[in-house]
Length: 135
Image (cartoon, rainbow, N blue to C red; front, side, top):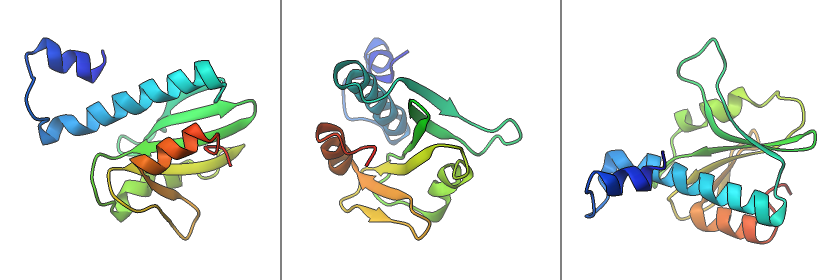
């Protein structure tokens, strides 16, 4: 169920509680990706990734386009921490992986030494709108 719908169903209409913000942001990103896939041919598949051997590693979205992959991890925090990149580092060897992005609510885009983009929401939206997510 969409977190926004679940929130409304339980009568939550005030400010978003900290424990809700991650699920709400992930749901919003999921809806955007699905919309851009349908309307702008952003990709042809969308999946969640987690290795069978680990309960801690995961990547929220792995977008596919033919044989290419783009991995997206969503964090509701305004500041990213080294541990936030663990899932994106774990998928680093997937065949066809073109880009890894950590989406956050901060202000500035950055890039790690191993090539993971850390983008604020505004940068992510610009990449979607200008067809640069895969670039």
